[in-house]
Length: 441
Ligand code: ADP
Ligand code: ASP
Ligand code: MG
Image 1: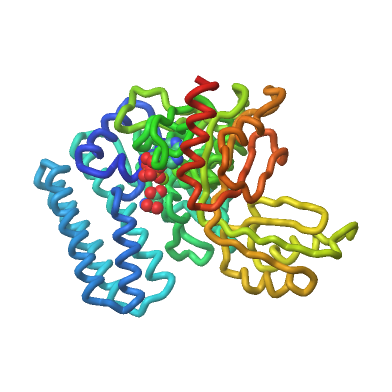
Image 2 (image 1 turned 180 degrees about the horizontal axis):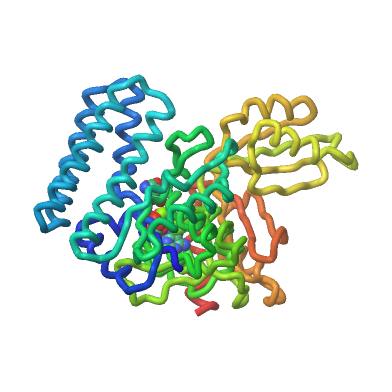
């Protein structure tokens, strides 16, 4: 059985939703995971933030605006009267819930419940459309089987057992529709897998049923060799390994949620990235195989802070790095990049919530320089087979752009460079020009 996930733009309009129905209607049993209609989760975030600020009339206005959009959506999606009536009732109930939530005392739970409605709406409307088209399908709520533990990590055993039970109830149904993004937490409350988390849902579901393949359908023809939001003339990559895809996703390639590679990798399930707007395009296949030489792609991750820890006493002092890492561990802050010299060590972090406490502790035995607005540029490929020159190519491409940190050799798949965020656009363009438009053509 395959798992197919369709992102926000893929279900972004009634036309697109109908197109998804065409893509999935091929007489093979499958699980279809849907995101919210594009723009909806952003609107719900806005509604939640207005509710949190107790701006009740603004929140109500935003809810009503979104409700109007769905009135039009339903009209264009469904033809028959019964389906339309059911959809209207559904939308009415969901928006009443939203109004009640926005009007009640605000807690973290309120936010999670508000955010969950996007996927609940899209899957219910899609199921109504499939029913109208006489396509054999059932909607199984992700809240019946998806669960995260105390540490916010997925509870693999729970998901597997509960999904198995849910699927058993519909042995003859071809299409099982479910929500991405939403989950229950360890207390049985509604929660989510973070923004962009529907990819992660699909991967967890795929791993739980040991799917034959996990397909991620989006608005682009696969993983491109650079970020198309910043650079023109990027090109799709046919094949990537799990490790290469994970590095790129973690370092900013929005096409894939960073956590979504691991469950597929652990079960060795191929992940195919496909374009809903161009289903005939080949896309990108992510597997265990490490194919091809040299540099394959570039990604960039913003919002990075560098911390330079300078200590004269570090010289020859074993245990110094342990002390540094323990401090970051104590304050639950993960480190992305690290470089060392004889008297200092520099690290980068993307979560600065506990930075003040970390600084205070490190300052007991070192001097600290913190710089914000940094970006990690990550160059990914298979560098084993290529004998020399990968780093040289990257440095030459970047020309005069100041490099704050360089990390190479941690794996044979990655060169990471820290630059000022203001240089990012230029850096990505230069890398595309020198790495992909000339030598690798
Ligand atoms: P969905 O809503 O389907 O989950 P996303 O917006 O999350 O879609 O991801 C697809 C987008 O990711 C593309 O439209 C593209 O702008 C962006 N993107 C960033 N880096 C890359 C890359 N290296 N390859 C392809 N797309 C990328
Ligand atoms: N709807 C959620 C979001 O916009 C999850 C997803 O699309 O993956 O973040
Ligand atoms: Mg996404």
